[in-house]
Image (tube, rainbow, N blue to C red; front, side, top):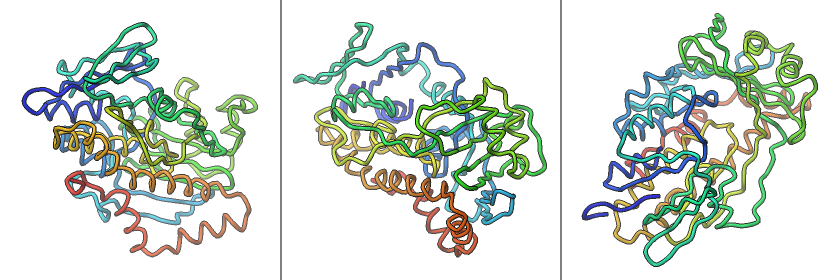
Length: 380
């Protein structure tokens, strides 16, 4: 919930707070603790955090200096030094998810109340604002409501009832290997391996912790034989080092599974004084590493849009219009990339590998320009 302060009236909350808004964050989790695994914030997102005064966030992760795509046997198809890409003072950084949450929580400080254990039941608008009703009976009133409540957003379900989720055909397993060292994975390298119906990515999120992910074709919601770790060890048994070693070094408590789901882009995100942000507005496959990044972009644009108008509804619609094209492109491109990355037929796999290996450097740079080159100051 956000309320205008003064004469002009988490990510978006911090940006709004710095522009004079009173913000309250309602979190459904009963406590804030170290959960999740890893994520990368690319230069487009890092530039927003740096603009909020959070340059020190870089120190909480590992700067990516080399991105590599390779075959199942470990042959490099593509190597890119990130210094050759559009970073412009905002490096790509691999983080433990809890490190990003920690930076944002510290920045919120005492100026933004965070209410825990607050599961939204519904909202309603009246002539003076929005009222949020929570399952435990609590209520909160504000000038605007920003639904940043994720893939299964309650706010979105009330705005757009009956929508269906789309399953990609694969779960994603995410793991953390603590105290892991291997000469094939130096700090600063982000490496992805694509095989036949399976792929694997890895990189350091701290000096002593490696984050990895694995994607394997499997029916939605169905358990795998032998348990997650044993299943992955068998699938990636013949993959190049250090993939089998990483899986073996990961404890069961550091292994998560999530079925990969998204939604199709929509034309209208919100209405009245209610809008959506992040996965609630544009859930996407993780294949481009832009889920969290696009949410951070959203927060920056939302703060600018609301700060530039006295008409709050107009400000929300302006924010949505400025974000719709880019986020729809990210959703669609992430889905297509995942389809190609999971090809199984040997000829299709060979064609994919050749297309990556033979892609001109200029083409790769243009793709990264569109992904990483977005800047908030250019979106005014």
